[in-house]
Image (cartoon, rainbow over all chains, first blue to last red; front, side):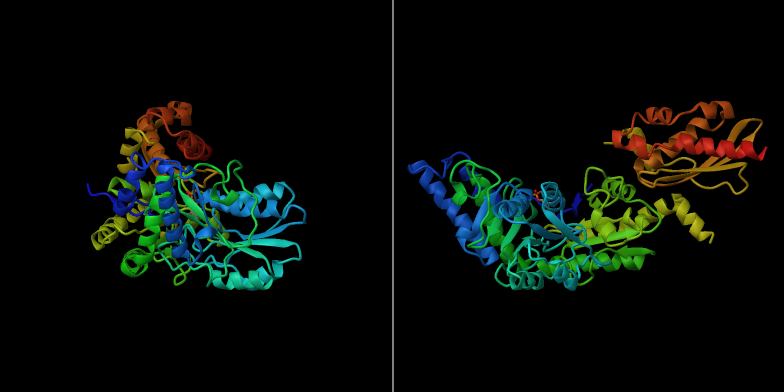
Length: 390
Length: 121
Ligand SMILES: Cc1ncc(COP(=O)(O)O)c(C=O)c1O
């Protein structure tokens, strides 16, 4: 059975070029980049080269890149590190209802410590109202955290406009760009971003490495205390192979925007159009235009998402669902709920995340097997037969 | 995460459908995840002659409906009333822990259908 991986928003395969670049840093160049001797020096050069590559990807400066262990750490460092830095003040933080749990749960943690929090609602497309954002800003607001692209629906926030608002009010702006890297252009100058999170495993680097962009002059209190690594912003001996891999993946990500993304977008659109033409009573979740080019989130009336996923999986297709029954994945989707989607539709949402390895044959296979799966489940559903009976 | 029996019953569910002139109809909805099972019974001389179900829910919900229907067809109402959700899960070689609460409703739905039959007198 052919295996078709359409869950690239969950994680991606390490790219061949990335893996090859990493391998020498396990046995031959194993030194600690903080050491001054021969074993450390060459490794330290490789780390700094990776830093330059990540900086170039974001249109940032190398000294503004802090390597971390993952996207969740980057988000935690941005939020908690900012709040701790403003320790002497009353502190108010603004975020949105559709952020990744790494942001939302950090914010809830801060709230318990006495930080005031505003969580902005979203509309049916998953977008925030910028006027509402301005109204939420208070004299004690220190931070706005709003994601670049949503991991479940792909909806893209107007980050440049949010950045301009933050700048105008002299508030720092953090964006979780974990899903955006390699899929849409990400430029910290154009978007006036102060803090930006990224994670290697979402774009062809390995799991366990990420980065936080920290604009020069943006003070942060570290989460991890220890040595002087990363200019005192994140202690711990660096994950050298991971960082080298992140550097190579960053370079590939920039090239991909022209080379791969138009192709992936066309395949995503083919999948979307194919589903809409073959299956009735389907809802596309997320903004139809302002959306990550690789992401399609669809709901099928009268049935439940996990059951759909199981049938897809049996035929080799890996996707993901926002169903309440999926307690281990992104289950019980707060994102789809926040968009005001009917709970039954929310419960059947399926996310397809295309990637560089996806081809037309994969998409056509899904379009072939999906309609009978939906029909089979609808034929079993009491809601469907009651609706048919009127 | 699912046993082979669950996968079998999920892939080829037995007794799916409706009975137009059912003697008893009952249903159960899970408060936690919204799973819904609807059961149709044909009863003669205190024995379940035919059973059909419709289920809205995950793989575990569909498999447990199917397994329950197999366990009680041809059985007396007394035997059917003695069946528990846990018996159904055991017959499926178990269900993942999170599913035991939300999707394991088939015996409850069956009992509702029997009650509906008995209430009709
Ligand atoms: C938008 C977003 N932010 C943060 C994360 C967390 O990244 P990591 O898995 O590297 O901690 C993810 C991954 O699921 C994500 O999609």
